[in-house]
Structures are given as structure tokens and as C-alpha cells.
Image (tube, rainbow, N blue to C red; front, top):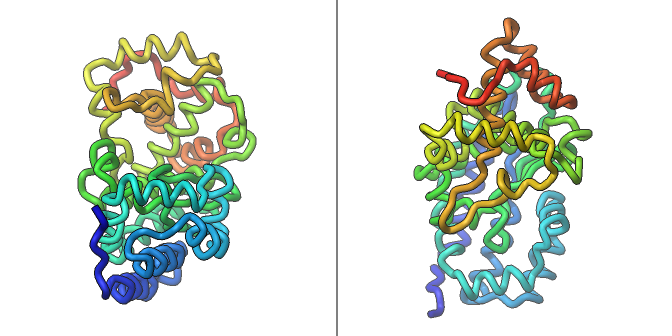
Amino acid sequence: MKPIVAGGLLAAITSLLLSCAAQSAPSASIEVQTEDVTRFFRIYEAAGGRPTAEQLQREYLDRGTTGLRHLARVRNVTGERIARAVAATPELYTNARSCMAAIPRIRERLDATFGKLLSVYPEAQKPPISIVVGRGKPLAIAGPGDGVQIGLEAMCSATAARFFDANIDDRFVHVIAHEYIHAQQAPALANNEHPSVLERSLLEGVAEFVGELISGGIANVAVSASASGRETEIEKQFAADTDKTDLSAWVDNTTSDSVGQLGYWVGYRIAKAYYRQAPDKRAAVREMIQLTKPRAFLAKSGWYPGIVLN
């Protein structure tokens, strides 16, 4: 069925994005780029909700921000793949239009979150956050030197509501906080193409823990809920797998039947144990973010399978 496209959509989106920009504070504010969204929906509306692959490639992706072009390159986002997603799952894009209204609402919370990051980690870099429209995934990516890219249509989807916060404002804030920590992490570990279970789990767990510290909540709430009551069982298996480079049992393994991603949860608990035992909390945050020696970090954390962490 052909999606209904509101004639005043572009004006409404433009108003929202201008409002978002106007509310940015000059001090601890991080730049949130939304021009890719404006351009996408201009093309989308003009095409009656059915833009062609050529239009999307030439007028949207090729003219995109640095963040959009980075996402397209590393995650194989093309005009053809977006066009297929629009045709197959039009609800992703109608949902994205409506939930864009969350961005101006959370501006103050984001500024407070980034202010807290600077207070606990003054060395923090401040790369921009690019809100973009993609092919339904990924939800978000980030890395040192690459900034943060948020896929609006994925963030606003029913799947995201299932695994992350049901409240869209909380979802944006907590996911962005998590990803912003990834943008701070040591390149030597973050860019390792063949990490061990321990290495990848600590990268994600540190981002989850420090993200919670600065935003007030974790990003992946479903993982935490799925693991509750099974701490010792899960972590004994994790301890046996730490040196493996087959990550399939621990990360990137969400399915329709399983939340997966238990490496995020165990890594979070190791980071929390590390922070809890540290007399200097600011130093602990710095050591977590700049982590390059996972084994030494694990040993110092005091973590063990089933450890009780309030």
C-alpha cells in the first residue's frame, strides 16, 4: 500500500530541526547534525513516499554529511538498499518522521549528559552526532575518530522499542550516551578487527556503564532483564570463553527468539565492579575509557562469576 505523505511534512521537520539547533548550549553542548534527515524527507515527500534508488544515491547519500558517508561506507548503505527498505517496510519511515519530534525535547538532557561526561572525563573529545536515515539498520555506530551516527528509522522502530527503552526520549538519550563513549575509546582496542570475547565485551560494557553514569540509564535494557537471576551460570561460561575469537555466543547475536548480546551485560558488570573498588572514581573512568590491557583490567576489577553488584 502506498504510504500517505503529508504535504506540510518538510516544513514541520525543518521547524523541529531549527528548534533543536536553537536550544543548543554553547558550553557543554555537542553538535547534533540533522541536515541529512531534512534532505532525505525532502526527497521522500517529493517522490510520494517512493523515492528511487538513483534519487537516494545521487541526491541523498552522495550529498551527505561526513557522518552519513562514513555510515554508508562501513555498513554498506546504498541508494538501492534504502529504496528496497522503503518499499518493504514503509512503517519504518513513517515512524521515523513522527519520532523526530523527540530531538528538540531531549536537547537539554543531552547537554546535561555531555556536561556530566566532561566532569568525570575532562579529556573527552567532542565529535558531532549525525542523525541520519538508512536502510533499517544499524541503529547506531561510533568509534574513535569517526563520531557518532544514529539511524533514525532504526531508532524509532518497534524492534528498538522491544530491546531498548520503550520511551523514545529515554531511548535516544541512553543510546547516544553509550555510543558517545565508543567515540572516546582507545583506537588500539576499538579498531581491533579480530577481538577476543573479553576485548569486545569490555568495549561494550564500558560504554554501557559510563553511558549509564552520565545519562542515568543503560541502553540495552532487554539484555539486562534477560540475564537477571542467571548471573553465575552466564558468567561461568563467559569466564571459560574470554580468549575465544568466535564472538557468536556473546555479541551480535540477537534473533527474533533471543535477546542475545550477553557480552554487553557481562562487560558492563566487570566495568561496574572495577568502578566500585576504585578509590578515585574519576581515575577509574579514565582507565576504563582508555583501556588497552583487558586482562589486567579484568584482574584489577575484582569481578568473578556471580558477583553481587548493587
